[in-house]
Length: 83
Image 1: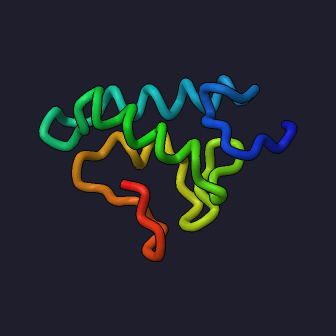
Image 2: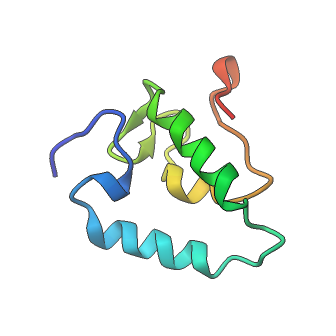
Protein backbone atom coordinates (compact mmCIF):
# COMPACT_ATOMS: atom_id res chain seq x y z
CA UNK A 1 0.00 0.00 0.00
CA UNK A 2 1.17 3.49 -0.83
CA UNK A 3 1.51 5.81 2.17
CA UNK A 4 -1.16 8.47 2.02
CA UNK A 5 -0.68 11.45 4.29
CA UNK A 6 -3.96 12.83 5.60
CA UNK A 7 -6.06 10.05 4.06
CA UNK A 8 -8.68 8.01 5.84
CA UNK A 9 -8.98 4.27 5.32
CA UNK A 10 -12.14 4.75 3.27
CA UNK A 11 -10.12 6.94 0.88
CA UNK A 12 -7.18 4.58 0.53
CA UNK A 13 -6.73 1.21 -1.08
CA UNK A 14 -7.24 -0.64 2.21
CA UNK A 15 -10.84 -1.74 1.50
CA UNK A 16 -10.68 -4.94 3.56
CA UNK A 17 -9.37 -3.09 6.61
CA UNK A 18 -11.98 -0.36 6.21
CA UNK A 19 -14.76 -2.94 5.94
CA UNK A 20 -13.52 -4.61 9.13
CA UNK A 21 -13.50 -1.26 10.95
CA UNK A 22 -16.98 -0.43 9.59
CA UNK A 23 -18.26 -3.78 10.84
CA UNK A 24 -16.84 -3.13 14.31
CA UNK A 25 -18.39 0.34 14.39
CA UNK A 26 -21.76 -1.09 13.37
CA UNK A 27 -21.61 -3.47 16.37
CA UNK A 28 -21.07 -0.68 18.93
CA UNK A 29 -23.89 -0.12 21.39
CA UNK A 30 -25.89 3.05 20.62
CA UNK A 31 -24.86 4.65 23.91
CA UNK A 32 -21.17 4.18 23.00
CA UNK A 33 -21.42 5.57 19.50
CA UNK A 34 -20.90 9.16 18.37
CA UNK A 35 -23.74 10.48 16.21
CA UNK A 36 -23.14 10.79 12.46
CA UNK A 37 -22.51 14.54 12.51
CA UNK A 38 -19.98 14.34 15.35
CA UNK A 39 -18.26 11.42 13.64
CA UNK A 40 -17.86 13.32 10.36
CA UNK A 41 -16.66 16.50 12.14
CA UNK A 42 -14.00 14.46 13.89
CA UNK A 43 -12.85 12.86 10.65
CA UNK A 44 -12.73 16.28 8.97
CA UNK A 45 -10.47 17.48 11.80
CA UNK A 46 -8.26 14.40 11.44
CA UNK A 47 -7.84 15.11 7.72
CA UNK A 48 -6.14 18.40 8.63
CA UNK A 49 -3.69 16.75 11.04
CA UNK A 50 -0.05 16.06 10.19
CA UNK A 51 -0.21 12.90 12.34
CA UNK A 52 -2.73 11.15 10.03
CA UNK A 53 -1.10 8.71 7.62
CA UNK A 54 -3.08 6.14 5.66
CA UNK A 55 -5.98 6.20 8.13
CA UNK A 56 -3.76 5.76 11.18
CA UNK A 57 -3.07 8.36 13.87
CA UNK A 58 0.69 8.42 14.37
CA UNK A 59 0.19 9.85 17.89
CA UNK A 60 -1.52 6.74 19.26
CA UNK A 61 -1.53 4.15 16.47
CA UNK A 62 -5.31 3.89 16.18
CA UNK A 63 -7.43 3.79 13.06
CA UNK A 64 -9.02 7.23 13.26
CA UNK A 65 -12.30 6.03 11.77
CA UNK A 66 -12.68 3.62 14.67
CA UNK A 67 -11.57 5.99 17.43
CA UNK A 68 -13.84 8.79 16.15
CA UNK A 69 -16.86 6.47 16.35
CA UNK A 70 -16.76 6.35 20.16
CA UNK A 71 -18.70 9.15 21.81
CA UNK A 72 -16.35 9.44 24.81
CA UNK A 73 -13.03 9.29 22.94
CA UNK A 74 -10.81 12.32 22.46
CA UNK A 75 -8.09 13.26 20.02
CA UNK A 76 -4.83 11.79 21.35
CA UNK A 77 -2.77 14.83 20.33
CA UNK A 78 -2.71 16.51 23.75
CA UNK A 79 -0.73 19.54 22.57
CA UNK A 80 -3.13 20.35 19.70
CA UNK A 81 -6.34 18.45 20.38
CA UNK A 82 -8.43 18.53 17.20
CA UNK A 83 -11.57 17.09 18.84
